[in-house]
Image (cartoon, rainbow, N blue to C red):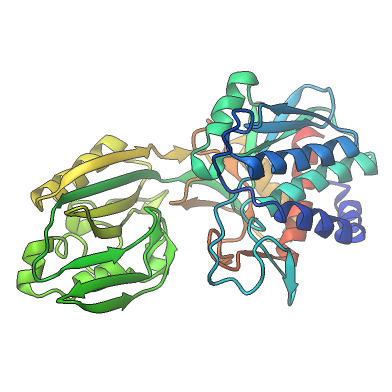
Length: 430
């Protein structure tokens, strides 16, 4: 492995304060999606400002950088043939005002932990990639082949940034993203996002309000009966990991009496504590990607209708058409109409591939731990990129409040990111 590992580690220790200053600068930019009204800023002022910040860093350090109409930028290390691209994003999800113990747009360190919107997803990893490039250049480490960093401004809203970028410039042969987990995330389940509804003018239950996003397990469900409000409380989690939370909607459904259940009709399809959709006719699993997940994440009365939403992540041995037809049939049998249904096929890269094995080798060399491949239900930035894998930025055992209040990355993990990416570039391009 890399003969420069110690020099690289020493470099990052010596430049720690500069790296934290850079991270503070980019965290300070609210780069969540907005409508600017300016066609030259397709994802809003903040997204464009974040891309401009990264370009400024690149120019100050002598790298060639190109802006693709504020959809994305890239930064070339040199003029050699490029075999590696590192794909990360500078946009973030909005930061709600409640739940934070510090300003989400001010980098705050407490007890060795760095708090702020984007610290783990994906600004912290972006800064790690930029300093990996700077480190290799300033240490004069020779590379036989070239690479580039690609940074987008619309990952959180559907990846229109990279769709546009790829019409302008093809990706290098190998791509990894620091938008997932270590050691190497080579298997991403398929996804179905579905919304449904039926006429509802009230009865035993006047109104229901639960859930704000299809991909989030709801922590609260408010129900009104005869003017009296009852709140069912659970625990929030990412929609792809329902076992990490407690679903307030299914908690409510499990409390229904016979007449109320006739009005709603969902308790039998979504039992409280069931995560794999077996009661809907699903419940599939395979050896590589494990068990599927199925979560009822939205349930609201509005406009004379009862409206719901389901988040499904399914194994790589199944197809979108099969899974969507099963859940659609189950909901229609319960008296519901399907409003929208969309999703993605699974993504898989053979763990025996040379590229994956090199990344696992870097992980083992840097950490001194056995590397292995993992599967997740979450969708990373390379889900639709053939051969692309996620390499970091978090570890499976960490809970970094991604997309939530007090989002954070530990200083230790941030420094590991820097070392991982510098060593990975050298291993693949050296």
